[in-house]
Image (cartoon, rainbow, N blue to C red; front, side, top):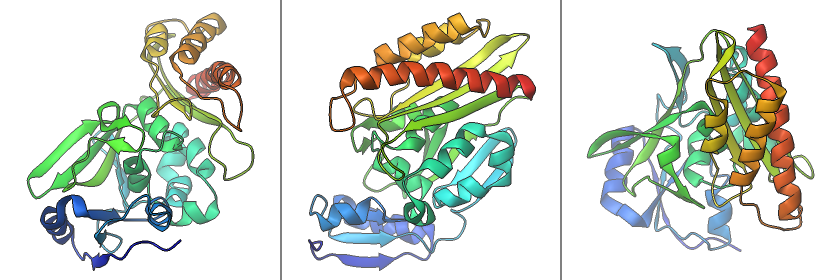
Length: 289
């Protein structure tokens, strides 16, 4: 199918894009990589009257670490995440997930901001950012606000962003000296949606776990942060028994549906396995840091 007719606007600055969104409101959609929006438009699941193209706005495609925070511009492409030296060296959870997002075509064009704003519960980066305790920066003509990822992701394909706002930046707390993480993804074939995905992040201090972050992909109505599993790890010794308990709690927090990729019981079992495996990998990398 072809999309419904719309008016195209190529914004040359962030201010121009925000003015357009303020003017058109609910009738406008932001076009970044287009890897989610364009298919929805072709299927007539989305029929915006106006498309505001932000691809030519300078300053939204940077990756930089300063003052204890990693700042990722919303127009950073997935392949740029995978190729970033600072992410490869210091942010193993992101580094592990970025090459697993969809397929090479999507990774070349798709943006991190667009992926997070799309809020697909099968999206990999939502879980990663939950595990890392990241926040998003939202801009409008009314000003700027920052939301933690846990508040930004509301429901399936639903976020806390307003119609006149643009997600401009993702902020990730810089890791301590002894931190590790990974992202594990079960898929039927390369490029398929995750049957199950698990993001994990551990910070060690004096032989115990100072902080643990876990994000689950594809096993609920949105990316899930199993808070009880994280709490079970905080302040504890990093033992196999503690990892197993956290994995059990994470599996209980998941709400998978049975489909062609597997039964709900199978997916919940894989959450358990992947959380245990991910925590072990994260611990080994943190211990070696």
